[in-house]
Length: 356
Image 1 (cartoon, one colour):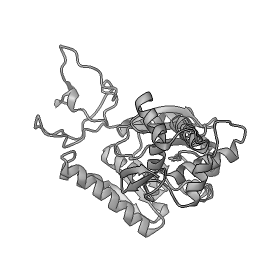
Image 2 (cartoon, one colour):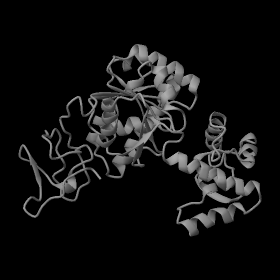
Image 3 (cartoon, helix red, strand yellow):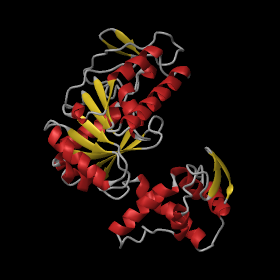
Image 4 (cartoon, rainbow, N blue to C red):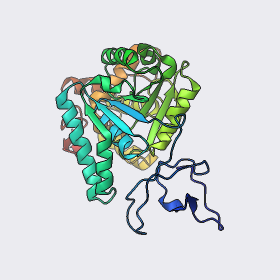
């Protein structure tokens, strides 16, 4: 998973400058152990102790980014910021939110998440403090001007993103690479907004970012191969699993998932089957951990609605993009699923109840 060569019977450990690093303890920031590396941090000497200190490499500028910026500290942005800071491959991480209240909320989320990692023994207090000290929480967009890599994770509002990318395009140094965490909007369109389409990629994380390993790295016809490779390897460096994809609606996962959810709702529209029977069928018949309507509720029916609405308007001739009547009705009523307490099911916080 982390591209670590398997040890032979004659070589049960890798030695770098006499620092003993066993394959079991090498952290995700070491991606290519066969290359020349410098160990900057030590791993805890306790055999059975959890990982206390990440071992980092001295990457060249072609392999990683010294300073990373994250725009937006909402549900996805705060997770991306945290993962970047705790990866120990960056000297600093800029966390930008234009509104102080949103900045404070994002900071609180990160601090709470890191604190839980410490309490569960997944991170030492020393490492937690070091990670948090790497983050520059700010409402000043000029703090991003010398960033090597800027990841945008603001809400899916194209007009908002247009304004942001126009500002970033004129503010940031010419070498800065931009990336969007969008799950449904056109990477190509945003790339042109930035004024530097050859230095623009999609990096779509999944929620919760701290746990989910997959990241879809999307390129456009204008993306420089070198830029794409840097973004792809960056995902490796922070301990995630990248997959390559062209700029297509929904990339890989949502292109398959959202139409699947929509078709389950069409069954409800036609009264072909009940909510319960649709979900239990996909659990027991297809081996899915939860049914499609349960999942739609969990994701958010409003999220599903806006994705499908955008796709049906932009791609009217694509037969797999449909907007089910029951979805429109529920969203108009304010029934968004888990987040509102009612959707296809009743919800009590994260606990699912009976079908509505």
